[in-house]
Length: 251
Image 1 (cartoon, rainbow, N blue to C red):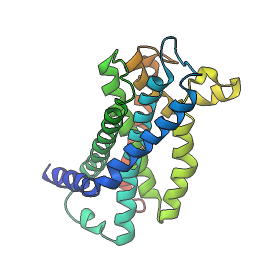
Image 2: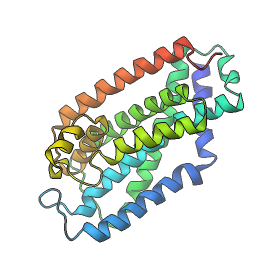
Image 3: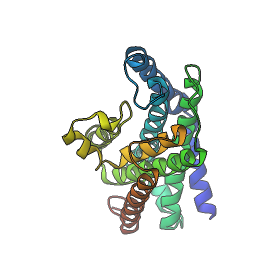
């Protein structure tokens, strides 16, 4: 597993060397969301009985930051390597397909967790949300970050140009995250959009993560765990098959 360790370390260094952009900037973005939405809606919205809107918003923002940055880490790394031509130096060593897959995904999970922890730390200045079930928080943080890391791997393999990757982010990732209950409870939605939200796997990552803080959620955390786990397994098998076949990697 020396190849895995080296590639994993390389991917960690890739985002940590520019941590002002890859970690600090997403934390600042989440903080701005909190400042604006909490200021406008805190006195008018109570998503759950006894839960302030500011406290409700914090886990959603932390998970959204984790998901977006986990996706960005794998997708941006692959597309940059493909365009600059240095992907060949990863393909030439005797790395197994699993080592290739695991190193990219785990590094993206680390970035997602670091950003999420940063968001939670800075938002403690506003309110301290309860921590009803810490294990649910950890489980959904890891599964959600892994899910989007694998999706980012698929996007990075598929995309051949930066604008294709941008289209993937703008037309799939952004709608999935913003329409997943980050800023609201899905029970407040009209029937049509309520039904649409139940087909969104990102909703289950955020709802399960939020359950870990408050002990209440829009759906059962076990249902959320099942949906996220099945989605992660399905996408992982797809990504692994793409790596094994060399699709758009080995020309």
